[in-house]
Image (cartoon, rainbow, N blue to C red; front, side):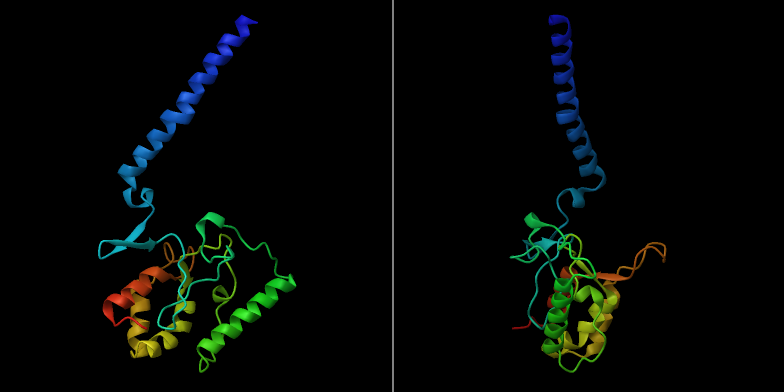
Length: 194
């Protein structure tokens, strides 16, 4: 018994030290050197105060701000501790009702906008925490934001263009914009809405 028990305990201790201690320390150290911003959570600061993360969606409800994708992390929107999808398939009546309600809310917030509502503004993402929306979704909201801030729509559209993240190599992914970065840029450049 001692001949099998002792090597098992030694192997268990060695693997615990390597896999549970040395390897995580090495990976974290490499991360701090190679990707320091990402390791620290991609935090966004303004005026010395942390206002969010560029990797986690934020909730905005004022008409003078761009709104992100709906969050399925209820009851509190964009709750990183409850990250998960709604698990509702395209044939689920609950998904259709939720999308209809979101379309109605977007139409009520901007009654003069007759453009088709981009799908990413009415469907929750898989994680429920998407920090980005499509450029089409940002442009759909540009009129409402411009009116709330008493700006020409062209200025708001130009800001969307400046902050747009283009597809990798021009083909992988789609053009998108980070909602937090866009709203903070609006606050820096123009007066903050009520």
